[in-house]
Length: 400
Image 1 (tube, one colour):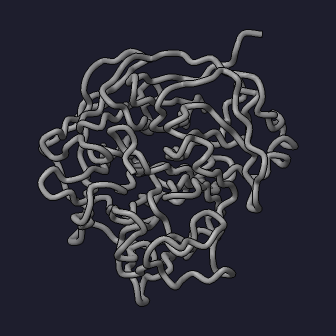
Image 2: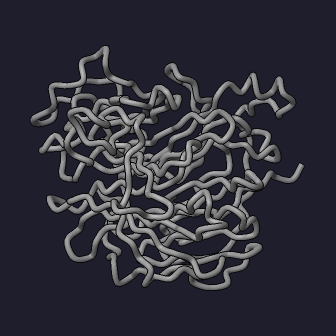
């Protein structure tokens, strides 16, 4: 499924952890919002197919806007000052392909390492490369060190795209199942394939004789399976995030014919989790084509929320979001904010480890073709990118 000309499916990736908001409120944090009302959208400018926003440790005034064509623009105090990185010669903007994710090393202040997730323009492989910044507003494309390459040559859709450093300091990435319909090669359940997975690696700082290592806590490290795999059974986890307060993860996984889903786990529960694809779609058994034999019902890490594709006239692509921690957004505080790319309406729910049945739309109407959400780790301000208009928005409270 291709989203308008861009990463459609992917969903997003939505990893989040909203933890017990009641406990947070007891420590003096605002109460969990009711999800009603509206927010104001502060327009920070137009970009070329923006698909993500990243933030660098030690650079509280900067925001880095990832554009699908292979460029990263840097904003300083909300004003665009130039191009931070240009790898248009390495990737191709086409459908769901291109530069899809960016992550700054936790020790960026000292080592200046930044990592990019993109599709190779020559053969469609998924590539994660490391680059070195020469200053906060410029990275050296010639400094590229390829960290990880995943063959992806059967189809051009389902590339995943999210890249971020987790609370444990390791690099996480969500990969799609390789494309086509129904995961015909059963990549998502195959422990020897890196497709259809949540991966966790240490990209090495500084790099050693290997391009990266895999943390010992990964479930197949030293066992029958790829060391890099942390969880499996995903179709196209385009966007996911961790809640900085609870450290839980929320993953938006794009569905095929029946359901879009949001998966939600603790860090402990994430290790070895199996989210079901392509034996399961949402809470239901998948019966389209040749499907995997695993996982069985009791071993399936079920989503906490799904919605049917009839909710968006058949064309759907869930875009994972963030657990809002900006106290100024009191109607959304402690709620998981997400959207469907094709509807463009902001929606939220209170994340729980059990099934959630009540998700609310905000009242401000359509935002556009949403491609990602991001939250500034310094200010907790929430950002939204849109593909159709190319706008970058920051969410602000409405006037009293």
